[in-house]
Length: 132
Length: 122
Image (cartoon, rainbow over all chains, first blue to last red; front, side, top):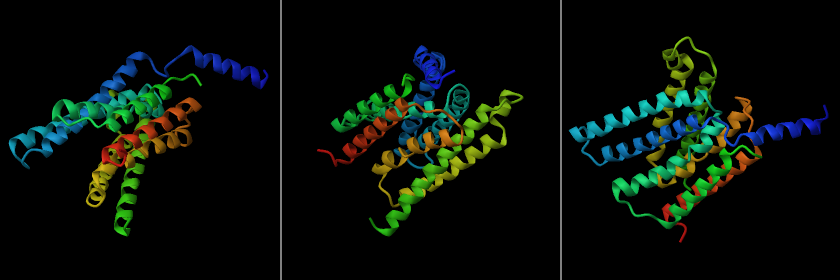
């Protein structure tokens, strides 16, 4: 078979699927990334508490628990997709963290952070779809 | 940039580099068949990867003694360069031009986000 024909077949195969992974695993990946971003919230809450106080122990325990949960899910996620696919989605945690910063800590939104987040989101949308 | 600052920034980059390598180890373990669900986690490669993550956090904390925290998104974002390089050369993963473009856009976004957060952009 000519090289050009092989390339055409490859391209057609790629066009049949929009995502590298089944939707179920794509959603599980994003749930795991949300869990990961929540570790940051618990970490900041711990940082705002007195060292070794009950409140600090509670939040630091939560950091460890959330990190442990993330590690459990992440290993299963990696079984179903390439590392580059998983990491193309990972920057979404920056956007989740921005949402948590406003929701939990009432931090003010900076216009450049919003623009940066939208560019990151656009990059993820471009990067995760497989059609070249 | 002072010499001390430069050394600490390099330590942070090294920390991101080894943590990216640990991700390759996790993926290598995930690609293998294991006897049980428990052994998917309790095997030398996964345990080794988490030891590296631990070392990486310690190095990052050491670097943070000198380097401002606001630089974190920029330095940590180098993992989005290390991972595709490791993915292609160590895991033999295929990476499309479209995905490379996506990663490039993400890096620009992180730069805008970080510089905006530091007040460099007005």
